[in-house]
Image 1 (tube, rainbow, N blue to C red):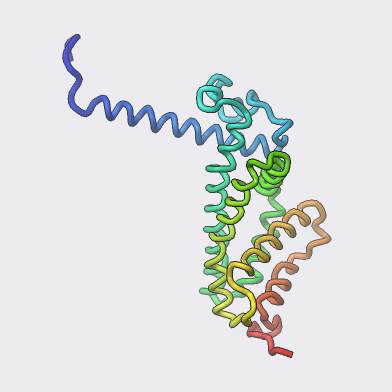
Image 2 (cartoon, rainbow, N blue to C red; image 1 turned 90 degrees about the horizontal axis):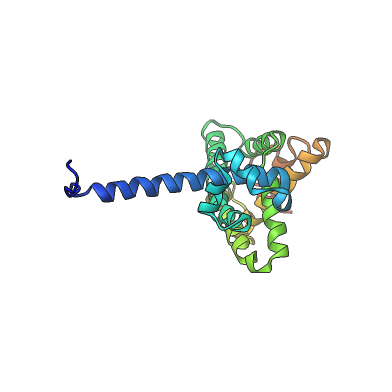
Length: 226
C-alpha cells in the first residue's frame, strides 16, 4: 500500500480489536500474578514491583492498566475471585457427580477433595482471608465482598439441592441455607486442616455432611427420625 493510500476497509477495526485483546490479556496476567503475591505477602506487604515481576512485566505496565495497588486489588476481588469461584464450583460439581455415577459416596469424595485442597497449600484461602480483612477495614467494599461470597454459594447450590433430593433431606432448611452452612464448614475446616492436619481427620467433613443431610452413615440412606 503506497503512502497516503487509504487503509483497506476493516483494517483499523481489526487492529483496534487486537490491541484491546492484548490489553485485556495483560490485565488478566497482572491480576493472576497479583493473586499469588497478595496471597503470599498480604495486601499491606505486597508491592507493585513484586506483582509486575511475577507477571513478567515492568512496573510501568501495571500503572498503565491500574491506578495503583488498591485498584488492582479491587479488580482481583471483582474478576479474579469470580474465576476462582467458577473453577471451584466446576471441581466440586465434578467430584460429586463422578462419585454418584460410579456408585461411590459423594460425601467421602467431597471430604477427600477438602483434604487434598488443604494439603496442597492452596493460595485461595489466604487470599479470601485478605479480601475479608480488607472489607472489614474498608466498609465501602463490604457489599462487594458479600456479593462474591453469595456468588460462590449460588454456584454450589445446585450440587447441594441435588444431594438433598437424592437423600431425601428432611424439610426445615432450604438448599440456599444448607449451601451456606456447607460452604462455611468447608472453608473453615480447610483452613484449620492447613494449620493443624491432626485436628481435622480425613473423614470429618463427610461425617458432618451426613448429619446435615440426615443420612445414616451405615446404610447411606435417610436416617430414621427419632
